[in-house]
Length: 339
Image: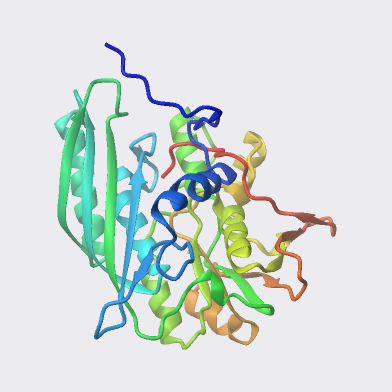
């Protein structure tokens, strides 16, 4: 007996595999928020900031990981699931503390693969100073699960005085990135498709808590931070521009892209600004704090633009040719199943 999904009359929008960018935003605005309401404070961020009486509050986040292949240069689905959650909490100005993990396992999955993934998760948790404290496991029929999916949720303690959110972005803010961009997406794609590159490109997968604490200890007035996952730098900038109702101008020549990543993107017809990272973030801080922020973030960090004082909302790219164009939100996911 077939049990078709009910479809309301006139509802012809369907979900595309790997959809991202505009489609994801539409899904959130048109489906999720009408049903669940907006998060506390009304701003969409990498996690929810929840007030707790007697302390600075907690940050709470959740994420699902469906990367293909399961193992790639520089990481795997296990380490990705932990570090991705840790980074979302760090972007909220919180010290990551506890993580839950849910596993969707495909019938026939090798126990050796599962043990390898779980060991990688344990190692990533230890290196990120968090504990995996609870979880769940379900099994789906063969051919229905790509081996393994992992869903994680994380809780962190918000550091007193840390207030990182799009609503604090203001005209005159400097826009910085913490390192070169695009590595993770290209690494996963090359591994998945068996593309032979002159140099092996490793994912930039890494916890960001240390850099967040370095900025706090240096006294940098951080207005907003966002890690550059799905949709890469282009998506993160557009999300923040929209949420803050601000415009910003980004200097293309100032954006750090490793030569091997730029070369691979050129060959494959991809844009490194839309390629996901798993160990990089964009930072908004008053112009007077920019140099202090660069020093705190360390080698590879770069000042790439400024928030304008014009009334026009959006992201504008000053190209290497000297022209200026709109840097649009990615309309789809160039590299599905990368995070």
